[in-house]
Image 1 (cartoon, one colour):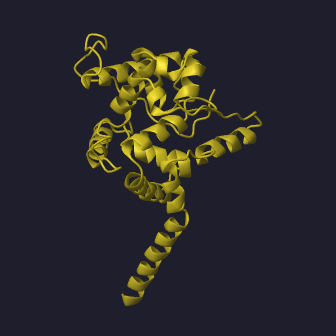
Image 2 (cartoon, one colour):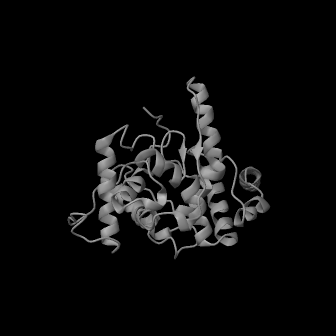
Image 3 (cartoon, helix red, strand yellow):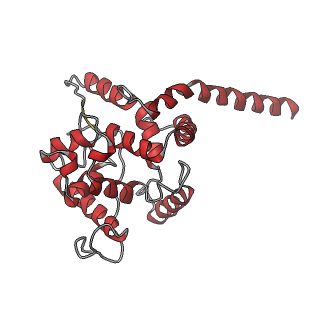
Length: 254
């Protein structure tokens, strides 16, 4: 028994070391307080995927400060992705519990519980690989981001780096690609449409699947109205919101 226990402890220590080795440096994260990151791990992952399919890769991204982001888009993203963003420390345990209960009730994965900070960590440093190791590393980086950066800075980075279509990153590039206008000029319908794309932007968009895009937009409008950002009559509120679109990280674009 002692030998088995020693082996188990050694295994846990080795795994913990493996998790730690794959983390970015703390100084790299602290540099984000004032500087913008270069190409993210997700961007590099998408470039490799495009090369593997013998397709030309592209990265369209235009950085803007939070002051140039449509207020409606900020409200739409907070409503749909992380309603307690300004109140939690990076991981929303209540959202995780609600997600698990919903998924058990539905008998399938229909709702995620990742916060904006967790999604930022994934985009910046880990990509979309689904593994326990990635989730543990993501949790550590999420805690560091919350310790070292303000909520405003986290939100600014998130809105500028997340994927919003095939090769489209950040809200400014997304607004121009999908609506032909600056992000600052988006109205609440357009903002809800962009927020509804976030679970799978290469599939949920006006070009690839207009019907799915409209369902995602309607859900975000419902959530915005429920949060008091827009009139309830605008969102045609029912008793419950439309079901969320299922995140499918590995699906390639059409």
